Each structure stands twice: as structure tokens, then as C-alpha cells.
Length: 74
Ligand SMILES: [Zn+2]
Image 1 (cartoon, rainbow, N blue to C red):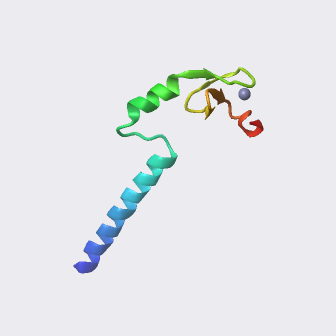
Image 2: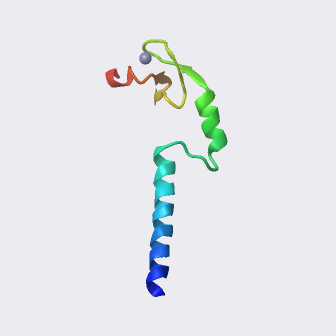
């Protein structure tokens, strides 16, 4: 009996760790949903090449945003 409870507890812990890290690295799908959607839908202009990217993809530096291609050159 005790072993089963331990296995279940370990699975629960692993599940929560997976969810926690999954939420960290991917798109959070919980409370910050609205903020994320807003960020994902807001377009900003790359300060270097002028291309429009979503605020989520953009790399912010000071007042400027940069696209993925330009981020390595800043
Ligand atoms: Zn750019």
C-alpha cells in the first residue's frame, strides 16, 4: 500500500514540475493569459530593419524593439 501512495505522490510531483516548467518555457496558459494575448497581438517595429514583429517575439532594449534577426547584431 505505502509504495503505491509513494508512486502516486511522485507522479503528482512530476506532473506539477512538468506543468511548471512547461508553463515557463512555452506559452503560459493560466492567469497571465490576457497579458500574453495582448503582447502576442501588439505589433512593434524593429529599430534596426523596420520590420514589424509581435511584442512577444521582439527583443526589447531600452526604448527599442528588435526582431529575431537583428538581436544578434545589437
Ligand atoms: Zn530587425
